[in-house]
Image (cartoon, rainbow, N blue to C red; front, side, top):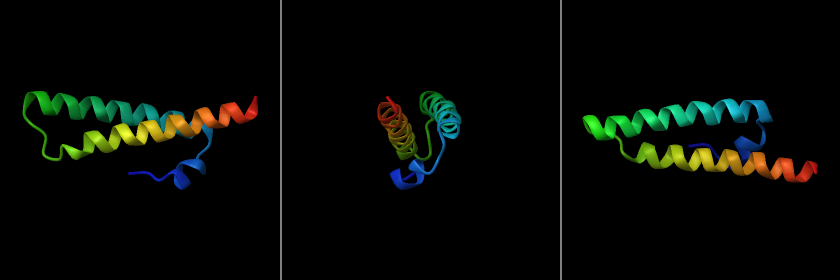
Length: 66
């Protein structure tokens, strides 16, 4: 789980890459949940929260620039 203080140190490109990576991971978790069950279901919730934090940080940066 990433903290906002960590995310704020990332640049825009790094946040975009991390969001893509987490979305792929989230898809994998969902597929595991449906097919065979997932060992750590809380990882789905953590991935969603991390994606939301990163997108929030990215949007706030864009709003500050304009």
